[in-house]
Length: 418
Image 1 (cartoon, helix red, strand yellow):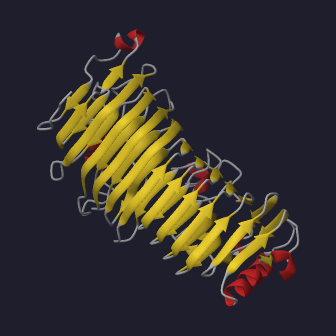
Image 2 (cartoon, one colour):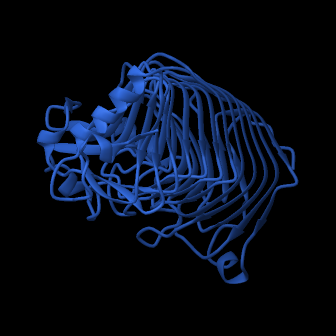
């Protein structure tokens, strides 16, 4: 065990301990690996990099504080105006871990609306792991990440268990966990509160995101609790999400396929979804969309998706929206219950749109409202072989007098079995 105090670290939030922590990591790696121990105390740190066979362990009472000073990070320019850094990094490392009952405290304490986010010149994530294998992240508490909390890029054999992420709910881009082009990822028994999406499967590069399980988790966010996309340059397959609770969300489960990726063999089961109000309108507990990011973007596809044993409380509707040139296929709903919690206007409702889409205004407006504004609580457009079994929608009497009585709107050749 390599105690950071033995390498010069001090329990202080006034000076950067990164050099001492990194010295302990390097010594551990040089001797074949082991545990780098952070004892109880408060330790300010800039960027540190994990090495193969090194596990970072934070003891109960230990807090690793991310430095707010951009000079303490190796910043990477991600857009012309924003540079990104990370408190903990690793690249092409194997058998690494972040563990223990201690805490990691990010720099994103304050609220950050869109207009303020545009003024920032740098953002600090808690952890970015690239092309790593055999990753274990367990028990740790992560508070107030400024940007994506855990970004896993092209990682394999990842186990995330029993962690807590508690970010500011009103801080833009403070995602929870982003498995990006990853394989063999297992997430369980986690509690995630985020100011953006809680778990987001992405393919920002043309590599697959596949063989993933998420189970026994709770999510709380004003955005999407579980999302596929919007970056979808690669495929998504064999993803199972079960036994999860979603609260206070804008979108419970969302598919945003914008960049030509293929989605297949995805299943959600034994879940509860509660959506929140936004400007007086109900939101979408389940939303699936195929769209082009740019006018010349390739068109993606969605097929073989199952929703089973799901309880929904929402003013909004389920919306499935394919395209004429790419119809969704084999989408099944089995024993899904929608309980309408109050009246929400249909006529001004638009489909959710991510900020990265760049369609012409005329085309965008038509596709955004054509189906979303239908007076129904389950809307499917351009879907082939839609199976609905044991699905129920409960509408209070006071709502029924104000809203249309139709429950399902099936566009063109979609099949309904209810």
